[in-house]
View 1 (cartoon, rainbow, N blue to C red):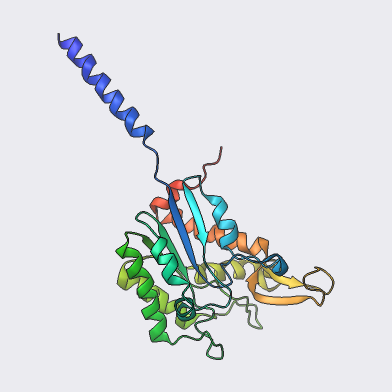
View 2 (cartoon, rainbow, N blue to C red; view 1 turned 180 degrees about the vertical axis):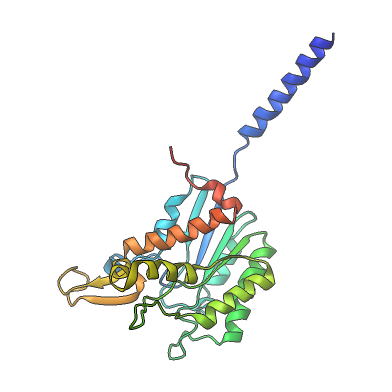
Length: 251
């Protein structure tokens, strides 16, 4: 009798474990909002590549990456141009929202300029409205520009606005990916010459999209975009966010 009861209990335990293992992860969407360093590029812009483009290939079939980043946008213009509201309405519980602005917010000569106070308020709005829908927000500092001093030291180009992102993340208890500092570290490691390989640096006639050539120290080529995406992915894993469990497993 005792043997039968023990067998019955073990059977139930095995069935329970099997059922647990068979539970499939619910499909989720990872929304990306930001500027040209993250956005999907038109064919005429290649080899310029936003890091959000290769980022979508990191995840398994339960994850859809929806890239809403737009060239030239700041937090303010993203809202004013009605790019935020429709996207915010489509988010659902369990989704993620990656927020990376700053390049266009911080430049006072651009139409996209956003004051420090408004930049902070806009970031807080994105975070608040995501959380109201049980969406997980992740704040990302703007990727570093390639700017070296005469002595070969990488220079800070987002000090104030990256600082605001860090402060909002700390105050709101939001996961932070410090792409600014980590991309600076990468550029410093590569140095002034090799770091050009990550950006759109083209000689005349090297690419049909840029017959006159181009020297751009802000926007990435395909290699640079993959490097930035890898930095973001590594931080997801390091912080042990649930999303990291959905990364494609290597065979």
